[in-house]
Image (cartoon, rainbow, N blue to C red):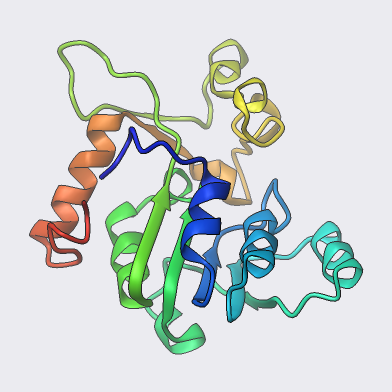
Length: 203
């Protein structure tokens, strides 16, 4: 797991997408398929965006660019994902891990659809000294605490984790969890122990 790699997310796409099939898992909410479009412009041979819903802005960008990006409505945590979309050279998953209650199940599914490169990106919360592997459940936190997780001033999607978008009922936000860096690392170690990944794949 690399946390100090000197690449932005866009640079990762530009590095790995050219000449490869590319699937963007969970890339709709808040960014309207931004990384799918970047992959297509970078020269990916096929681009598929998988999410539980699509936005009007994504469709507008699709028409405007005369894009060949394919949209598949699917839940990335379901065991049927492989049957629904097949496998890809590059599996891109950014900003989804903290929305799912079963991160290991998601990682296992992503591994199943991955031929070569799995690029998994997630925001992390600060470590709590003396308490490794900590996490916080966003819903039902008082607004003054929720505002701590607003990423719009840190380069993230507008109010991506802010008080306005963490519904207690419905949507992906109602089950969001913040995980510390040590927690994210532990999740990968658990995935290795469960046979979902190998150590070289998690590097």
